[in-house]
Image (cartoon, rainbow, N blue to C red):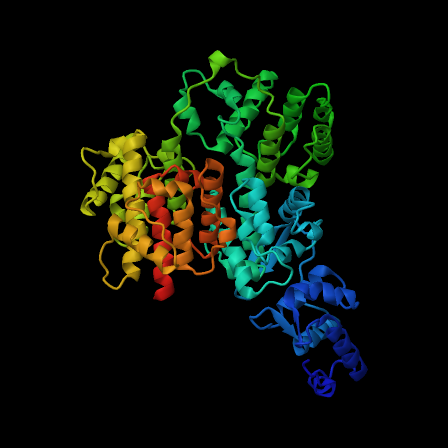
Length: 615
C-alpha cells in the first residue's frame, strides 16, 4: 500500500485547512481499492459527488479538465486535492446546460468549439432509449440529458460500439470488445479503434478524430460522431429493397435507375411532398429547416399519415411555439415524439428535423404496398457491393462533398481529381479544373477527361474510356476506374512502408498472407484472391493471428463448413482487424462469397498494419 503523507500535502495546499486535508486523504483511500495511491479518472466525478464536493456534474467535470492529470488516466492524491481546492475556489469555467449553443475547449485551450445543447440533449435521449437494458452498459443508462456526462460515458468506446450496432445491426462482432469494469488504456484504445473504424464502414465521415480524442472526452468531436452514427441508422432503412413501396414516389417519366441514385435525404423530402400533395396542400418542402420551422407542413403530414389521430388543429394556432407543441403532441399519438422540442422545431434545427422526419418514415411510411406485378426489377447486388466499398474508401480520403452515390457524385470529375491529388500530391493542375457548381455537361466532360488522362499517366488500364462515360454514370467503367485507384492506394501504403519501395503485386500479397499464417503457427493456405478457401473465413483469422499474435481467440472460430459458421468467422475477423487499427470496408458476405477485389483490400490493410508495426 502506498504511504500518503498528509503533513506534506497540507504544506502543498495551504488553502485547504489541515483537518480537511486529513479528511480528504481518508476519503481518497476509501476509493483507492487496490492501495496503489490512485483512482480511475473515469470514476472521479462520481467520487467527488459522493464526498459532497462540487455543485454540479458539469462544474466538477470542467474543473477536472483544468487540472493536468497524467496520461495514464489514473488520478493521484495531490491531483485529487488540487481538484477539490479549485472547486472550493469556484470551479472551472464550466458551461451549464440551458444555453442553446455551448462553447467547449478544444485540444488547445486557446481554441473553442460551438456545440448545440438541443442536439446533445436529444442524442442522449436517443442513446437512453436504444441502449436501456444492454448487457454490458445497461447500468450506465439513463444518462442525464442536461449534463456533459454522455461524453464521459463514451470514453471507453463501449457505448459508441453499442450505438453503431443499434444503428446498423451486426456491424461489430461484440465478442471482440473489452467489456470488463476496469480497462487498461490499451484496451480502451482497442475499443475506440473498433468504434472509429466501424463508423467509417457504415458511412460516417471520420476526419481528425482518433482514439485519444474519445478518451479525452472531446465534446464537439464525440457529438458529431454520435450524430453521424444515429443518422446512418435512420437513413439506412430508406431503401427500396426494404420498402418496395418507395417505387410509388417515382415522378412521371423518371427511371428507377435515376430514382435509386437519389441520396436518402432527397428521398425523404420526396416522400414528405408526396403526402403533402395527396393531402391537397399548397406548400412543398425542400429542406429540413426553414420549410418546416413554422409547423404547418408537419401538421398536414401527420394528419395525412393518421387522420383519425392527428388533426389539423395546430394550423389555427398563431403562436409558433404553441403550434410546435401541438404538432409534437400529434406525433406523440403515433409514438414518434422523438428528436424535436418545440424550441428546436421553431429554430429549424436541420439535424433534429431530419431525424424526426426519418423516424416518421421508418415507423409510418403511409405508402400502399405494391402488387406483385408492380414490383420493380432491382439492379444486381454485386455492383452495389463494390460501389459501396469504393464510396467509403473515397470518403476516407476526406473528399468534398461526401460521396453518397458513387455514380452520381463522381459525374463532375471533381471528387476523382481530389482523390488523385490526395494519393499523388501536386499531380492535379487545379487551374485546369472547373469547380464552381453547378457544372454544365461540357465542363463535367472536361473534368472527367482530365481525370482519365491522369489515370493513363499512372498506367491504369482505361481502354476506350472517355470522360462522358463517367458523366453518364456508366457502372462498369466507373467501377473499373475507381477500383484501380483504390488498389493503387492500398499498394501505395505498403510501398511506402516496404524497404524496397517498389510496387506490390497480387501474388506478393498472397505470399505475404501465407507467410503470416505460418508465422502464427497455422497451416491454412490460399493460391490467389479467387481461392475458394477464403469462403470459410478461417484463413483471414489465421492471417490476423500471424500479424498480431493473440488477437484471435480460436474458441470463437469454427471450421466454417456451413454458411452461418463461415459468416460468423468472417464477421469476427473483420472486427478483430478494426480492433488492431485496420480500416476495413468489406462485409462478411464479401469474404465468404470470395469477392477477389474486396478481399484484396482486406489483406492489403492487414499487410500495411503489419509493416507499420515493424517500421
